[in-house]
Length: 556
Image (cartoon, rainbow, N blue to C red):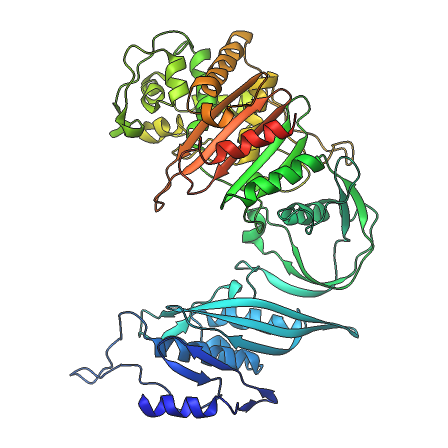
């Protein structure tokens, strides 16, 4: 190893030439410097023969040399255009070969230079520079990538852990990179006042713009340009991910699409999520369903519309409507809130194992008592909550048509302990901020109005409807529960200063593998309803609450 280190150090100032390209130099932490050479001495991989003459399979953590040597082999081959050799250095040669071949043939990327960075454990970052060329039009391409080295179980050989993201971070497995005339013309998206919505102006607007282009590009009157884009595979499309433009070689002529976004509220939403990592928020107009704002701290994915997360105790708004309708709870009547309640062989408890003795249902709702809800599970049918969510709140029917891809929530039929957990927004229940903003809007307005970003008048699409509404008595009690929670319950601190006819509900959702729960908050004030989530944030009242409250204030 000592000799090898010295050789690498001498060559660092005189890089080799590979296939007409200058090889780059890499510094691997703990392994000294090395250059991307096509040949040279291989490192000892530590494999030894066993007593019966068969090679022993090497196990255990990868060494620094194994990681850097494997990365060198793969990147050198890719840079040199030696696709079979690059693919062979991965743990999925067939998939790697197809995508790397397409990188040149379909994406039309040439003159590729790969510059690795410092290794961190088994991960090696690298910078990519190249040129995209199509019918005489060229444009430089540059982005940062990363690969991870793993040990193959069958023989212990270190290989690149193959995923499409190795080629480009925006790729999901099954996606392709394609350069050519865009299948869909670009769009110029406008806010409700006629101002242009751009990524530069609004940091998290990217996924919305991509969705608008995919939906309305052809019918908005634009003309396609030439671009490098991600073409989504079946798996990504199943998750409602849109094709994405990575590089525009020549501009098309955009068509115009008007949205319902309010520029002042969108600006405020962007500002709020920028201050809290992993946060997302959505705001809707109660009386119409118009989406006035949506923002995400992580701009690569529109969690506000497409997230699928357990909503925790914010789901108790829906559950409360069910219990009240069935005569199992009433705002001002006594209701049990014990420390523990066992259902389906699961022992449920409240936060900090509190209990409320001789308390009302309103007190249990305001303090977010889990056992107050789960204690009613034995009196419910397995599909009661599912039907309530679908028939009253329009959730989980997979028929929302907001104008861009969205997830409409899920409240699957479950039994035993999972059904009990669903009553408090755990189990199989999944929501996003738009879903939960809609829940508050339904309570405030008295009827479900499907949220939308583009008016249905633009394309004649049909908006989702709920099959029934709550009784006036149930609705009145929900208003009382949410108003009390905003004034004197777990939402009081966040809602301080939010005047007018306001109501709120907090939530915290436990997630396996997370030290902190996801914090949720849903609320209404006047004609506005909003909801937000801060993933791994903790209690909703102190994390998502201030974001939602600030937007309710900003909306007047």
